[in-house]
Structure formats: C-alpha cells, structure tokens
Image 1 (cartoon, rainbow, N blue to C red):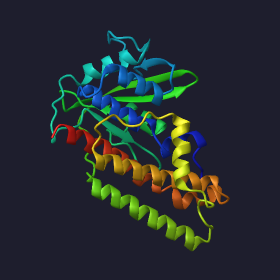
Image 2 (image 1 turned 30 degrees about the horizontal axis):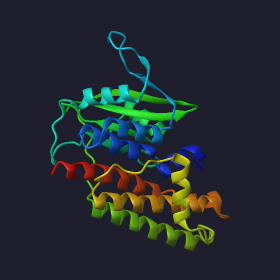
Image 3 (image 1 turned 135 degrees about the horizontal axis):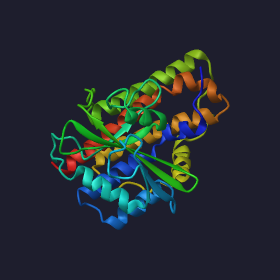
Image 4 (image 1 turned 90 degrees about the horizontal axis):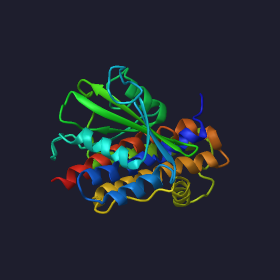
Length: 277
C-alpha cells in the first residue's frame, strides 16, 4: 500500500482548520473580538504570513478578482458577507462547518466539484452557511512559505445526506477504533505500538508544531472533551509511526483517522448548536 506523505499525515492527525473553524464561528456569532480572532487565525495558519484569497472556480464575467492579496481582516469580511443572511438556530446548519477528508472518507460536499476535490487534496476545509440552502461557500486554507492561501469556492445544489453522529456516538467510534487497531496489531505480531512513548507527549509535540492557540472561550465542555479524545487517538497514530514499527503499523492505525475526523466534525457542529440553544 502507498503511505501518506509526512506533511499530509500531520494535517490528518491534527488539523489547524478545526481551531480556525471555531474561532471564526465564535467571531461571526459576536462572542470574540476581531483582534482576538485575527491573532488566533494568524497563530493557527502561520503567524506573520501574507494572505491570499483565490477564486479558482470564478467565471470570467464575475466582477470580483480571481486572486486577491489581502490580510486576515479581508478574509473575515468575506466570511461575514457570505453568512450574513444565514439563519441561526439549533436545527439550522452551523455558520461554519468543519469538513474533513482522507483515505476512505470523502468530504460531505457535492461530489465531483472543485470544492470537493480541493478538500480531498488538502484534507480539510470550512463550509459556510448562507441564506440559500442551495448555495454554499467552501473555503480551503493552506499555508506555505510565508503565504496563507484561502481557496474560495461556491457550491450549488443540496449538500449530500450524511450520517449524523451525537457526541456520545463519536466518542464510541473512537473507542471502538482504538480497540480494533490494538487487537489487529497484536494479532499481526507487529510489536508494541508506540515504543513506550507517552501519547500525551506526542500531543504536545503536535501542538508545538502547529502553534495552535487553543480554543475560543466558552466552547462547551463536552465538545472540548471530544476534541481532546481525538487529539489523543491522533497522538497514538503519531507515536506508532515514529516508533520502531514505523509504517508497518499503517494498515492498523491509519483507519483510526476516520474516527478522529468524524469526532472533530461532530465537536465543531455540536459546539455551535449549543451556543445558539
């Protein structure tokens, strides 16, 4: 089997877009100041970098530019405009949804669209709700060499039906995934996954690598706990691949990432529904 590249695997383990989604949502709901969200986004997506908004699927007749060099403020302004008419409520689509993809898991977006392909390529994106249920905005951020690029797509049509998980179900999926991977590793005689390294240290290493600013104030405790659990499972994968067994454990531990991605998306969704309850 082919193995994920280190950079892509790192993004699958701990996506900075998760934290960006919550900070942006909190700002759109008026729960944090603009300066706070700018600092958080800069910390998450490479501090001090230039920002660029790209419209890869923009038609030539659109008035706006296909490329715009800007700052975080302009990104926020665009997000505010996109969600201005979106209804808010427990039963409504959250203003900002986290959309993740990886091996064996397609993003919850209309298939065969530029937005879906971009999220599949990068592994993570943001789905912004609007006033029209048949039109959505998808933003896919990526940082490289001092430049943060925000690919901005407009998706037409209904979103595909997805299986909705509660926090408890997402937690159970994580537990089952860990148990199954442990059993498979043991049965295959791969050896002790992790090499004796404490997964909590791997969590710290991942946090240091991404410079994550943490979560905005007031994130519901249950959502925070689910994301922490996802971090721990992601750390198990990181520890396994850094241990003496290395990539030989991939067939057993990489499927854990599906449960991790599901948990992160559920937590972001739950957190926003709680703040409008």
